[in-house]
Length: 107
Length: 261
Picture 1 (cartoon, rainbow over the protein chains, first blue to last red):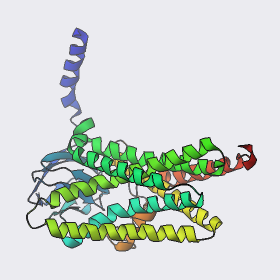
Picture 2 (picture 1 turned 90 degrees about the vertical axis):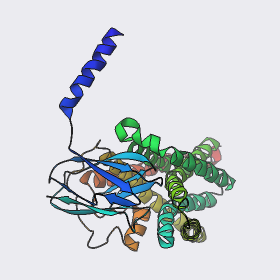
Picture 3 (picture 1 turned 120 degrees about the horizontal axis):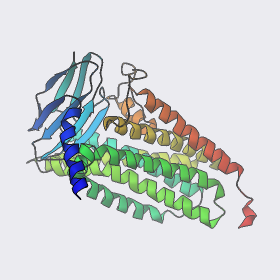
Picture 4 (picture 1 turned 90 degrees about the horizontal axis):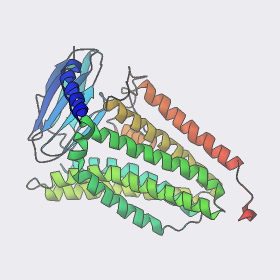
């Protein structure tokens, strides 16, 4: 038991060393993305942290990024994107596409 | 909003509808009873509801990659069902194999409806909770589902009214392409979950056939079309089709004469 705790403690202390890819946060509010444009570095994997603040579900979808993920109402999701070439990659909320539009700008 | 409801429901229904119609037609051509289908569809709908209701919790499991892993698993399960189905068909004169075929069919139908149904249920339950949206969303979804189911019915009659040999071949060919599409989608989810490295897309045909276009959407449902596929997706697509084709041919070679059983 003591060893188990020690191992857990070690793992926890090690975690920050592997901080992983940079995190970008997106919010969905009233079927809009905030911000609706995010700029990320080229050739780098990034982690999108999408928070759906609406009560309704939304599907983050992008043909250009080859991503689709349903995010239940009042919940969060993580989506990895990249590494990407420079360019503009639109994304949208499939459930409310009239308003939920955004793009990833890779520089 | 109405049009959007049509499109979303159509997209999800179309894929499941095509798979089910081909299984139905092949079962009919194999002179199997079709009563199981109602049960499988009902179980699939329940599965879709349960998955949809728990999607938030599923998503946050496995470091936030739960949804990707479950979806990859569901697509893989459909692929395996197709593999078992196609290799068991040449042995239909044996009762054991007939049961195997039936189990594979039911699994594929249940899983296909669970996967597509969960998204429809999440969409509907959300959209209908918005004031004044209930009616347009409901009408739009019924229209979308109607079109999707009609295409499936059309495909079904096309297959069963062809000469037996051609109907079986066309059905087989379609299932092969669906199998490739399932593996390609499973790989895409594993890439999204960061389990597999995507690399640069092998090609970019978005100027030729956009995934947004009607043709692009239809091709996606039919053959798993991607405008910018990862190299590994293409490799997985081609090899999964090759595996099923080879396994089916081998199974056909090993079939025993009908009077054995």
